[in-house]
Image (cartoon, rainbow, N blue to C red; front, side):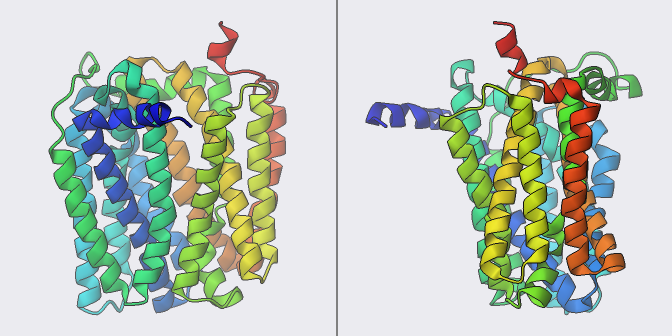
Length: 412
């Protein structure tokens, strides 16, 4: 890569609003990823109950599900910058509460679940706003660079966060919550410094008709519906990451540092896969690529459940992240190419529902299944169910499995 190319790639950082937003989002993601490791390990250490690991996901998902469509309409109607700053402030409050509970001696887990309900509510309003605001922060000619740099920064935070969380946990959960709270303070300050930007606002009074417009749009686009619902149900059954504290403790016999490495590997796989896709983008047989990525995710979940080797588990999680990245890549492009600007927040909210369900609700499903079947069998079942969903969706959505090019390329 030439110097000029490298310079052009980072020239988007000259836009003050984008740089502040990117810094705030990266620090907040890093803080939340650190907290996730501490919460999972702390809860399992207190109860040694697999159901509680599932409840961590459910406590975040239920408020998210109840509020996300309203949050999407808010992202189209109000200043997205303010919505993000307020959501970051709520996340900071969650971190401070976790720190306070730990300092006073946490002996029960229900206060943690109460904090996670608040966090899920904040994330509901932050998700659509962050997906929709980027186009408002930079000129049109810099938008593609902003997207690439934003994605790369997010994956760096996802990679570093769990590792740092595991390492800092060696000094106790108080250390993790204290450092993550400092990072969230910085993120709130930076987002508050972003100047007001011009954005298209939803017209007309708020109503259930306008709130549900994004859902109606997704339902009318079968290829989009097939893509995001595939991710929903496949990852819903394959959400083995919620059980990583138990796998680390009971099967692999490693400590919080090893758990941090396990949680980091999907992010590394996704980040490296995104770099490959940046140089070699998928342009043909995109439907098959997406189905194949989900199938890889399912196969590697089975490997994760079957192994007692720490290193094989790391490799399986790495490939799970790479396979999931392919699915995310195709879905993201489909949504962007098909969505009108004036309903971007509401469609982003629907997409966030599917993503949130596949993650948090998948964690709850994994905890429940582990309680019924046992830890190892639950992971194996999740991988097999993911493969079954992949095959079923290839039949139920033939337009998806036959899709060769992205829609905008077909119109050329």
